[in-house]
Length: 75
Image (tube, rainbow, N blue to C red; front, side, top):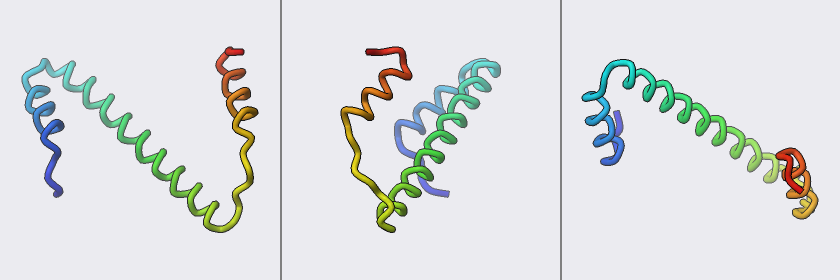
């Protein structure tokens, strides 16, 4: 197994001192975050492959931001 980063190592050392319910909650949150990161990596890789295959198209950034803001209830 790869060596853990120092920050994660310190955090896990602290987590073991917490009540079990808190440990479980932190564990679930961490696993959820890891899954989101994995999905993001998959999406990025898929996008890169599509661009490499010439499937990209120009992006109207103003229109893109307008649509995103509209979905979030912005102007």
